[in-house]
Length: 380
Image 1 (cartoon, rainbow, N blue to C red):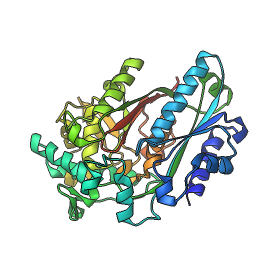
Image 2: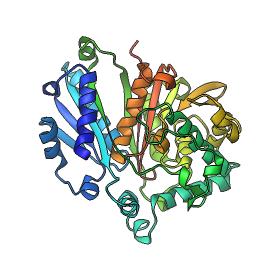
Image 3: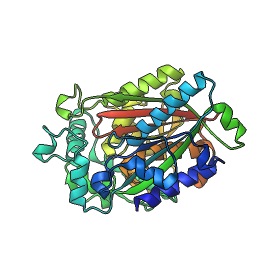
Image 4: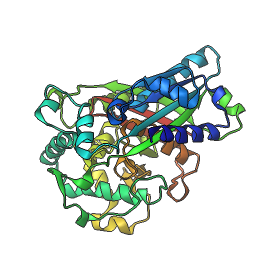
């Protein structure tokens, strides 16, 4: 059940941080819709019963719920640092989705789109992203097999992730079931259960805990229109682009400095749009990165994790398997992306470790109504 998911991820994070629950000053929880998935409201009080933490705030931003929680925790720690205070904060993201039939889950998730113009007309998220994908294929030279190659790559990466939902390879012959043209079933992320937790603190306190840690350089959020009909450009994730630009400006870093990124591939077209929004490719050219993987029939013959080539250098995208193969328990996804990057920076990903120096995450809410971009690096 969802309580077990929260306990497992939280106590694992607490143990890894070499602290106890009593050391935690506050807790931020990202969850999209426990009330409709599991019938439980009043989440903060229930989490207090489970973990024994008093100061708890719950955030909701659809699939970006836990990355918004991370942003609030980051802000609290920045303020604490200015006051020369040390705090330890726990961030939790979780969702329990599989107790509902697919039709009901689709209905609940649709609530993260615009009710009056999209939901009421029967549009679902596969439908919305199919509209985006159709436009992308129309405006660019991208083909459907470019979308499929992303899924093949991410499944290949997930083979090395013991916590991935789908640890199996797929190939082009598997893309037979239509969901919403041009998207096939295997272009879509699965309905998933999961929880991910993070322990944040000030750098001085982190050093005193005698643990391995990474530095969270920046967490930036931005918003855009929730309705596709009001987008200035259907192929640009405005919220993601703005969040990335703010983070790059704050840190003095750019896309060229990032070795590894976990992006929001809820549908395969979204991975392309994420890469364009974060500056790794120009508008309408993200599919060209996919083609650096080689011919799609050759991808499964290569050793995972598989990198894209950006101006001749390797860029690792979704070494975890991404939402597509690792899974997409929506409230947990933003935090889970950060967990992967942290473990990569600490060299704790086993065979899929790529030894990055700087990593990032880009987490999207809905079809782009909200976004959070985080940059992490080794502290040395």
